Amino acid sequence: MLGLRSTGQLQEVELKLYDWLLQSRPIAASTHPRITFITLSEDDIRQQGRWPITDETLAQTLGLLIAQKPRAIGVDIYRDIEVPPGHEKLTTFLPQHSQIIMVTQLGGGTVNRIPPPLVLEGSEQIGFSDVVIDPDGLIRRALLFQDDGEQVAYAFALRLALLYLAAEGIAPQPDPSNSDLLRLGPTTFKAFGPSDGGYVNADAGGYQILLDFGGAAAPFQTFSLTDLLAGRVDARHITDRVVLIGVTAESVPDVFHIPVRHDLREGDQFQGVFLHGILVEQLLAAALDGRASIQVMSETAESAWILLWGILAGGFGVLARSPLRFALIAVGGLFVMTAIVILLFWSGWWIPEAPAALTWFVATAAVVASTLGRERHERALLMELFSRHVSREVADSIWEQREHLLEGGRPRPQELVVTVLFLDFKGYTVASEKMTPRASMAWVNAYLDTMTQVIMRHDGVIDDYAGDSIKANFGVPLKRVSDQEIIRDATHAVACALSMEQEMHRLNDKHEEEGLPTVGMRIGIHTGPVLAGCVGSAERMKYTTVGDTVNTAARLENLDRDVVAETPGCRPCRILISETTAQLLNGRFQLEGLGEVSVKGKAQAIVTFRVTGPPVEQVGA
Image (cartoon, rainbow, N blue to C red; front, side, top):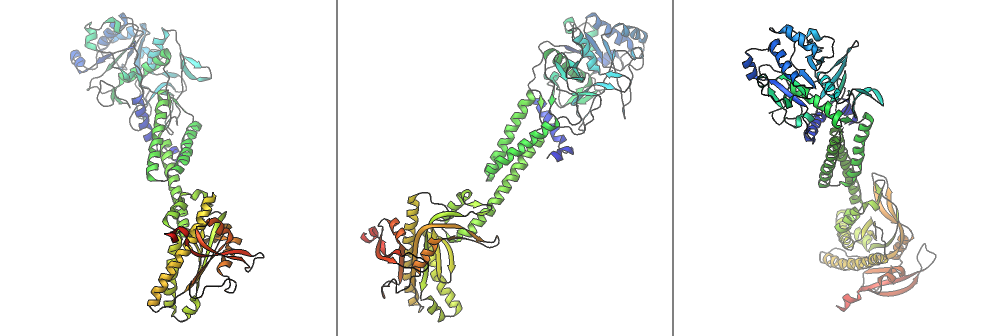
């Protein structure tokens, strides 16, 4: 965003925001008006019968004003050539009254130079009227000085302001901390730089300042030339004031475009004489009232301001995990930023909002998109690992607690207390040898699909299929933090085994009617600590549990018939659980103690129980 801003692509937007800030700025008009305007309208020109007015009429006008003792008189009418009659009278009158300032134009480029009256050439009674126009045609800056290498020229408005301030004992001074800066009273006017505020590589020649247009906040005190010549202007509107004489007639165009609207005018067109008055008022208000000029931040501070909003966007963007939250955060952030910018502008500081706002919005959107993309990837990974083998409720719980489950884009290894269930079908091998491969696959899948649904209904997680066997875990992948949760997992596992037995009987009856083979089942269940995590590569990953608990459950399922006798012809499903699991059941199920049983791979025998029936309360019911 800083790079984009440096190209000037955002300048137009920033200047429009600056214009809006100018219009919103609450500037109180002075209770003691210091400027009076004498204007020449179309009616005044008709009264005179000609344009331009003669030197004699101008001299008469100046004489009437001098008699009322103004502090300064500015004539915003060029007099580079004589307009008889009365030229000799005017040229004699002007040098005798130092409070009269005549206008000139320095020119340059495609603009011609317009010299002052010859009699005042080189004196302090002239000031240039040149203005600085931005690329969009608006005037936002004023030129106070222009140095051509030989002499320093003063702006027309500055000359008038200095004459007024001289009566207050205020003279231009260098700023104590920087002698190159102008200071009037308590206010230092910082020279405009080419990249100040929202500008990028602007023409900063001469000594420029930003116009605050405070003088446009109230109606101007304006009188016509005809009224003045007829004696209808009270002296109190002239005495001790700056009097500006200029043209407002439409036939003599002298208009400019400004970024604020004056309450007596339609549109943004502003006559040149009023524009000079705006600058005079700004200079006087700064020197006498201490009204702060508009300040700008250094480029380093502006960059820090913009980057700050990028950092904030990163932080808040992580929280916006839905379009609604994104909209609320984006709009809320822009509201807060705008409020800060407005308050700082009212305090005299122009802070760039456009690049900061774009940074905020784009960074928030980027972080949200990145977060949502990462979450989609994580959800896809979790759902690939779990969703097909768990209930929807368990899948939702896994997703809600993903922060505790994922690490580096994959489930983190965890030490958990889990109840592991192993299931294997009896008679599968013999039966499958008598069927075609297609029929055998459909037959065994009927059992596997049914048992999978039973496991999922009991909040179990399918770990693996191996031929006609199933491994399921109760208590993964979310860590159990209480004994009650561990007890619940063990209870669910045993209840699941009994439900699978019922489903097996149902399928056996169905298959027997269809002339298909039937099966029995062996189930082993053990509760204990495991290490749970993913094995495999990024392309093919599997979530599983490992450890002695897993081995024990597998051994219980696979106990030889001569170790644990099976009831002939009665229970084709054998459910064996360890003593650890049995203790967690708290007598909820009907159990038959088998004593200590030696299993392959373990030095110590395992106290084993056979599950012979459903919970006691169900039997009673």
